[in-house]
Amino acid sequence: RIEGMHFFVPVKGVVSLGYDKVSHPYIDVTAPANTVVKAVLDGTVIYAGWNDESGYSIALQHDNDIVSIYKHNQKLLKKAGDKVTAGSSIALLGNTGSLSTGDHLHFELWYKGEAVDPTKYINF
Image (cartoon, rainbow, N blue to C red; front, side, top):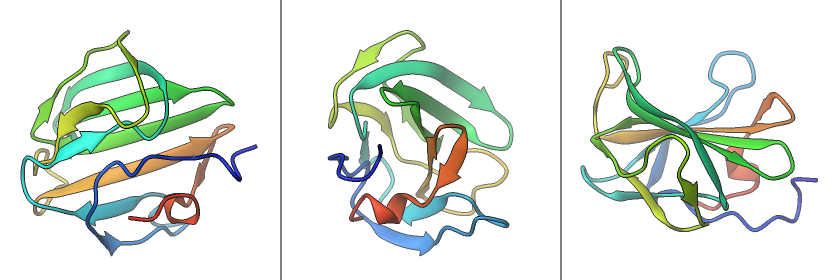
């Protein structure tokens, strides 16, 4: 179960665009460029790389079938296969990729293959 788990805050900031199950199944959090982005739980990096839309992105696999995804970073601090602990630095916040319009973290939280609202579990 995801309820009652202790998640670290990936970045302290302002939720500029909230979660909507249909049109925006993730959140955007604004914060200054190069703010350290942290892992929300212990896990393993399953993806760390670049694509034109999302810029520098990193995805972590956690226990209990939970995946967290962090997009539009300025720089990635981990690579695929790395083990991370909750609260450890994984990236620097940025404004990379064609879908980004300013410095922010695009953050996704997935549980058992479905996107969930991160603000229900994490106080940004």
